[in-house]
Length: 331
Ligand SMILES: NC(=O)c1ccc[n+]([C@@H]2O[C@H](COP(=O)([O-])OP(=O)(O)OC[C@H]3O[C@@H](n4cnc5c(N)ncnc54)[C@H](OP(=O)(O)O)[C@@H]3O)[C@@H](O)[C@H]2O)c1
Image (cartoon, rainbow, N blue to C red; front, side, top):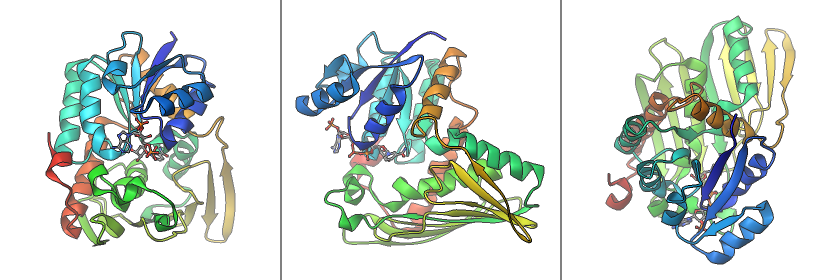
């Protein structure tokens, strides 16, 4: 495989996890970073040995040496920045959630296909080998037929100093940031889109959803239910309940490197697959394999599945009355 040059937009918290992972990659090279602040850009570049720092996102996007851009900015910027990258002819690894609403992700996936570029939503869980192993075990029938999936995901962010999760202009709230994971993991395990969605949620003074509870029914008759919270400290586990046993993904279930399989008598097996680096390596390597193969997305997380996730979140937002400002919903 040829070496691929990566650029990062937004050297925040998750960009650091990405930079640590790519530093161990044989074919991926972090070549440039763009920050609105020269100090932040330079500090990131120094820590992760990045040769070029831009203080304008547009300048990085137009750098002819860059093959693929990792977008690690808050939710409200994903759509305009991914569009900018694709229009400039760059492949894109786009942090979750792909966009704020369904129309935005539909436009991006069409654009990537028209331009023959790779566009991938970076739901890291979907690329983890442990999740593939869990899926394999389910398909082998170790827990019988799945009856339902249940999970919680949430943290008491009010105890943290600053959080983008409480800013509606950045597309904050529990659902888009955290609720996305139970939806995405259920989608991977059940392989279908729900046909009934019932949601309840508290949209507080901050104008974001603080805690949201969702029940999803699938055409096969199975269910997935979850609670996500930006104000409550959750157990953060997922249980896949079958007719002959169950599988527990321990906390944090979306950082999937372990799973406990139980039959009717108790624990029968623990799958233990520690990450080679920090869990980001799988989506980085898969992105490069797909680009090399001329694909527009990975089969592990397709464009239709990204669209399906946002469709569910649009429906939940409508049911709980979570509206964002027109500016971030715009096309
Ligand atoms: N896969 C995962 O496990 C995981 C975990 C956490 C977050 N995420 C996702 O990653 C994305 C970024 O999250 P994060 O926690 O890394 O956020 P963060 O620490 O707040 O960093 C976001 C970066 O975006 C840039 N930015 C540009 N305009 C901004 C604005 N108006 N306000 C704030 N920041 C702005 C900032 O960089 P400059 O100002 O330096 O340009 C900032 O450093 C989100 O989509 C989030 O859902 C994924």
